Length: 366
Image (tube, one colour):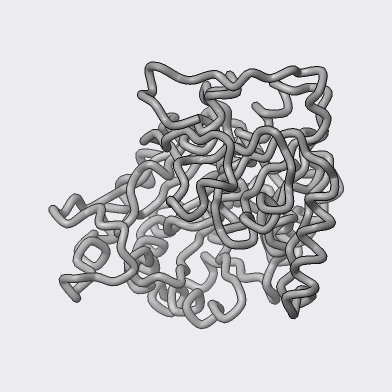
C-alpha cells in the first residue's frame, strides 16, 4: 500500500482475533525508546489480547522494565553478536515468534534482519528507501510535531493516533526507596529542593557551556540556598560535569554521585526532583516519563522534542540558523549556545518553577 495524504488515511484491514503477537522495532537511542512508550501503550490498547514485544539495544532495555504494556523485550547485545552467524541466529530466533504485526520506528540494518525473516502479514513503518520497500507491506508518512506523536501516528493505518499520551518510565516502590537512600547519603534532606542537572552531551551543538551552567547554578543558589543540584553524567563525562562545579564556585550547592548511576537509578532520582534542567538528551525524556517538570536549553535541535504542556519548557536564543539540527556548527562559534546568557536562563528557570509549583514533583521529598 502506498502512502497517501494524511486526510485520506488508508486503513489496513485487520482481523483482531488473529493478532496474537506484535513486535515494535526501536533500537536506539535511550531517549527515543522512552519516546516510543506512548505508541507501545496505544498499540496494546488497540490490540488488548496480543503480546507486545520490543526489539531494542541492551543499553536501552531498562527503560522498558515494569512496563505493563510490554510482554517481552528482545535486547540486542553487540558484545554477544560478534559475527554474522550469531547475528543471523539471533534475528531468526526473534522472527520465529511468528509475529502478526511488525511496527518499525527505525529502519536500521538490525531491524531489517527481523523484517526479512518475518512472515508477518502486516509490516508497517514510515516511507522506506527504495531498496527496503520489499520488506514492508504498508507505510505512512512521518507527521511533524512532538516526537512521541510522530512515532505513534505512523500507526494511523491501524486506527491508532496520538492523543496527548505521555512517555512513561515505570518505577517500583523499591526503586524509589533506593533512590531516596542514595540522595540522603549524598546529603539531601527534606529541607532541600532537588534539581537534577544534565550538563553533558556528546554533540557540541547540543551542549550548553559548562561555565554558563555553573553561573546559572550560582545565580539560582544565591536566591534560594535550599536548592541542591544533582549532577548527572555518563561514562567519560565526569570531567565535563565537574567543570560545572568549578565554574559555579559553590560546591555546597551540588550533590555528586560517587559513581555513575544506572538509568533506572537516575530515573528514580529525577522523580524526586522539583525540576530537571539540561541539554536535549535522554534525561529530559525520562523526566517527562516520571512527571518531573523540565527546562531544556536548546542549541541545534528543535522544540519538537518538548512535551506540549505547561510543565515542560525549553529556551532558545533564536538565531536565524536555528534549528539546524546539525552535529557541527557551520558558523564555528556555537553562537546559539555561547550567546545565551546564564542570567536569561536563570530568569526562565525561576518563572518555570513558579508555573509548576502545584505539580506532583513540587511535593516529593526524600
